[in-house]
Image (tube, rainbow, N blue to C red; front, side):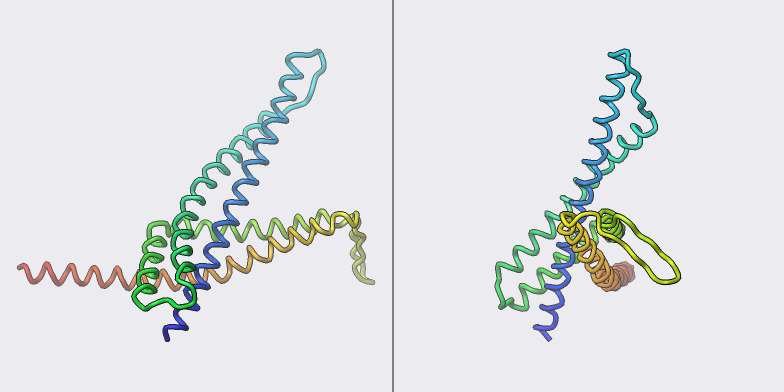
Length: 216
């Protein structure tokens, strides 16, 4: 029973760890994309006002890029905060090696539940972000690798743009698969944790009600 609980807890921690890292990566990419667009638009604006040459720039694109950069930065800070908590729990678990006493395992599970309860809404959003990021990575890997795609009654034919993009394609597809798999399994764990927390909250409410009744 102890070994089964330990193996499950290790799996929960591992998927949680992957999801937090994936969110940090996706947030950094969104922030970097927003900053790159802002810089490009700023250069276009500068060339328009400082030279006689008219360069097209879009205030709408600039606004969207600014929102993307700020959102990515904010989500990066949020993900790092959640990551620090799970990294501490994971470090304690890994530091115990293969043999984890019952008391230590219980303490780690309680710490995990406490960390999850404090960040429940954020973690649910992280699962969604990780899923969407995995889908986008998968589509990006396909889009970059294909030069021509033809669908006909006879079948589907395609050509690869360049063999040099194959490593990048495999990397993006790997990131996508890891993100989607971790999101799927961790969402199942999160549902279990929600049930545990609901049971704890019900017990706390019942205990509080009992104590109030005894005082009367």
